[in-house]
Image (cartoon, rainbow, N blue to C red; front, side, top):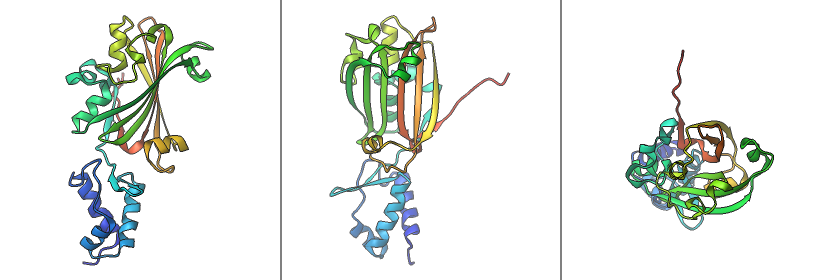
Length: 248
């Protein structure tokens, strides 16, 4: 059989999605693949470029081509249930979701005290608010999955584990809020699709042409006070957005 680059891409696509080439692992070299398929290295390179455009692999200079495909994660209100985000000691919904697909969740965290940007302050119903800003790059077995920034009022967050630059909060922010006497009872999310900024593309290790979800999450207490604003940026291929709502 004479393989085209699309044939090679389709075969590798199946091997990746079946787990033969697992997430985070490095594919055989272009030379080795060319030998396996009996084609030129340039044809293999073209097939890999196609898979990279789909987000299944990521070429890395001097380090081969790494598999970056992940089984799409479901994003719905159910991910915020306490029994989900605290399952087996998970540090929030992301930890639980990544462990459920057999990968290792990793967190890169930076925390600062700052004045929130104007648009974030407005979501708190204020013209200006001092917050603890908790910025996280979340990875699954070395694959960058999302960039998350949480803004939390200083009067609640200062001096708590929310300022720890480590993933120490079992159940995530919402569980800690509850333990501090500030339980969230309602949240809403706004979801946009856009292209990443150059900085986001670099941190997510994706091309600037690969679309991302831009998710704005706002959490409130029973008295209506907004106590959390979180932004999440993640490649669209990593999520399935699901919702349930009444029809009457």
